[in-house]
Length: 375
Image (cartoon, rainbow, N blue to C red; front, side):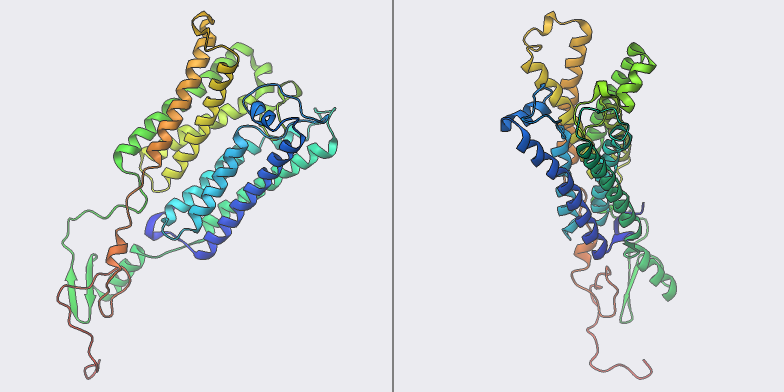
């Protein structure tokens, strides 16, 4: 994906992208409100998200998990970032694509899980509405990708290079009213706007990579310990592992988060301009994933008798704490501002006849009141 000044999202693409983000947030928020209405106590929804077995007021099932409010917050954040003109196009595109990737991975298994007929005791209309919600969100995700890919226009550096080629001037030279202001050769090109600085990028990459590999390591362990048949139920879905209507199977969720974390780590290590939103998305998901497990261990008393736990249980709790801490630290590192747009200062004062992005030469003559003969 082209980013930076050579791939600018149009105003129309930004507006459509923000609208799609708001629709994604609305579809999930409706189910959160629904869970609050069927809960015996408002706090039961929160306790259910933390892993406790709470029953709703009616004979039905919970719809949301701890990741759903995070998806709502992420969609709203992406919408705001997309609408803000001060946010570079590469960062806005990264926010849209990161939201699309996370939503697609977490909603995809619901298409077959909710349509398999395993949940016999539940209202068929309820499961069908949840399945339609997942399909609608997957459609919105596909639309987000189309908006980012098709909603770009060339500009900035590419346009200036074409202009210099036509006028026969060397790249990096600026001309206005007969005055050529050459930029010395050998100077490095300015950083693309929004690109993470090296220190925060390496920090976020190491933390995300370590946390993602830790989660993936446990999935490999569970696959070997449980066997292929049992593990497949937790990966692709089964009535025995059902938790909530919009929650993916437990092993699918862990594998999806590991994939997002490792992918974001690779992108931010390359210091791609769109990598900061991807790293923030993966870090926030890891933070919630690990924090839920840690809070559950605290509420069940496992932390109080940590030394007496079996080795595997201690490793699980320690891994959850590490994933939560790494997610929080990576989120802080990725949230650091990226490189500023150097072209904004240059665009402040333009020479007569100069193209956007070309600075006025120091001693350029003022524009003539009357053009010379033969001009």
